[in-house]
Amino acid sequence: MYIFTIKFPVLHSFYTSSIFTNSNIFLRYNGGPFLISLLDTLFIGASHLFHSLYLHGDFSVLSFIMMISVYRAVLACALVLSGATNVLSFPLAARQSAITDVDILQFALTLEHLENTFYKQALAKFTEVEFIAAGFDENFVKNLNFVAHDEEQHVVFLETAIKQAGATPVAACQYNFPITDVTSFVNLATVLEGVGVSAYLGAATAISSKEILNVAAAITVSEGLHQAIQRASLLDVVSANIAGTPLTPNAIFTIASSFITACPSTNAALPFKAFPAIAVNGIPNPAQAIPVNTVASLAMPGPNPPAIPATAFVTFVSGIDIISVPAQVVNGAIAVTIPPQASGQIFGLLTTESLTGTGTLLDETKVIAGPAIMEIQPASPSIDFTVL
Image (cartoon, rainbow, N blue to C red; front, side):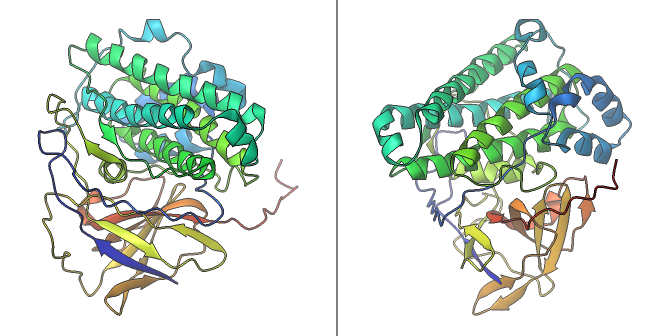
């Protein structure tokens, strides 16, 4: 059983002159890193079909198609940034909601800035000798340099797209990454890449332009391949779920905010907020949990935690599944048992209602706090040879 506690760090406004001064992040690594499945890029070329499904409101089919199958990722990885020059002229459209395609591009750039800085700081800090001493080989170090280059080019690509849309790209912020050695770097790299995959998947249904959706799907594969490199280097299962896990922008924003200490006051404000944080205490077998304290939302000012309804739930997002479990208050904390359907990198959020679904996005209006990120080791797969 997991024990959840709600954390309220210092509150500040994001992308204004008053920025997080204490994100109060706490990461505890205990063996395996987070897991995230690679994506099936065979479907990248079908983004026009995705757009048609989106326009007809078939979000579940859109989300499922973008998430299924790890096994063809390498086959289409060359599509990641191919033809980049030609797609920069794609039209930008606004949905009926307040979130525009430019907002999504700025949001993606915010995450890419974070990853770009993360890799460059680590590669400047650790030598190849230190990687080898920590148990990683020369080929892994070579791949890390390719990953760092990818993240750099993602930044350049998104900045160019935003400029051509008539907007000013957000600049990089200042970050605090809890890196103490090579191993902690590799573990945290899997976190950032996994969150990146979930961010692109979760933003897919908010994109109006089919050209942007096509590019987002391609970059998603790149992020998944990056994470697989880290996973393979640690001899862990690369694909612990049949699909990637989409997460809503506000939930992603909450996680990303925990690494940010300051941003330029000139950066454009984004229409996202951070939720109050929850941390996970205890690591029961077979799951491996990593507690994360993220930044609380201005919409729920501290220092007092929000009122927890008697019928509160902990809702888990795992792959294409959303599962809620009734929360039990134990000694001032919330206790819950992980549902058996959960596998791989999962997200847990405290919600006011029981939420369930397959191939849908989490209803953020029901979120009290979170997400916490956990890793659930999968059982050995059972192969059905009658499925042909």
